[in-house]
Image (tube, rainbow over all chains, first blue to last red; front, side, top):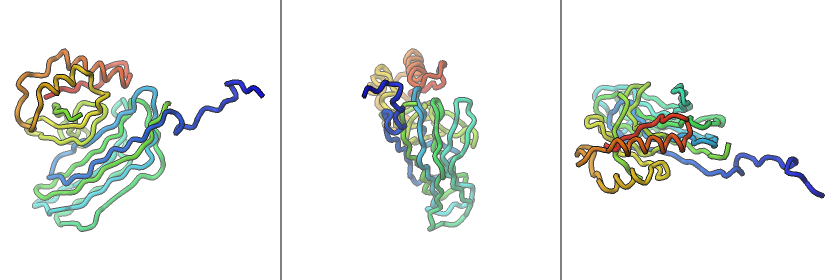
Length: 142
Length: 97
């Protein structure tokens, strides 16, 4: 039986020239204002499924003056509108032996020219914080 | 490839410190000198910019480059990124610093 090309279903996203994208940062930082540690922008003709994104925080050494410490994963579009899809914050002058973590639920589709960004911030004076930010995604032909 | 770039942003929630590139990883910054190391995908860096980076290796976030990054290379890089990410206009203007 001859089957025309019109009867062929379009391949699933993971069969459309797909590749895995893993971007991660896990580092003990001294206090610093909001800093972008990594970005990934979707190129033309592609889309990106963000399968999981994760953030974590651990107070390594105590600050002298406590300020908010944050780890977050942000999605920004070409118009600079943004959404923090996962985030962990802590405000303490002590040392936390517990790792505070958070993880996304659901699967976001990131379109061409949109960007996934890993950001850390620590507005304390003194002390150090372990910041973890990461995401795993699949890039495929749009 | 690792490249030392000019830092942008002011460290606020709406304008965090970063470099003017669509994709990179492992940013290490020095807000005082305005410089940062970033790991940039080689496919995002045109050959003429790669040649400049290789010609003037940097070992810290303090020492200035012996020669400024030429405007012609900056334009070449911005156009390369605009083509690759196809936004019609050059949205990113990274500068080796």
